[in-house]
Length: 104
Image (tube, rainbow, N blue to C red; front, side, top):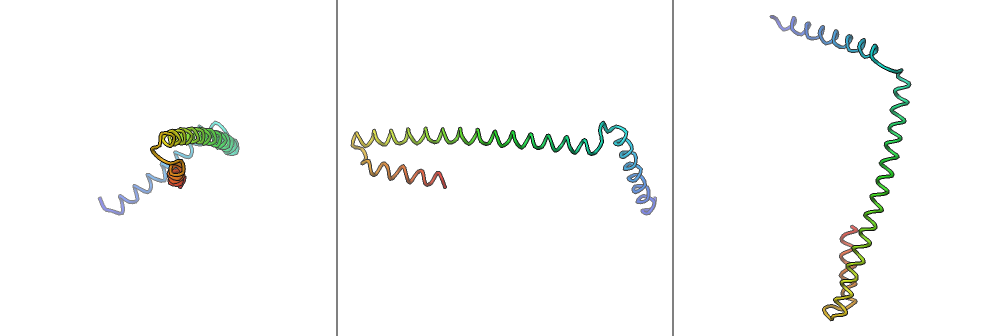
């Protein structure tokens, strides 16, 4: 078989495959293109809203957990300062330094 014949057969098969796929797609499409685009738009807006809400919930949970962690850290530092292991100023300085690292 020569190369030109093989390329011609390949291109002919590709064109026929595309045409058959288009016909099947048009016959099996349950709704118009406009209706499909509207459906996709509505679903994407609903998804965007859900993601935004979930992000806000997640951010709030992280904020609450961080606040709780900081409160426990300050309580531990105050306890250590009360026992004389560290001064209150040094504890506050170390906590603030740590928080700066964590926050960026």
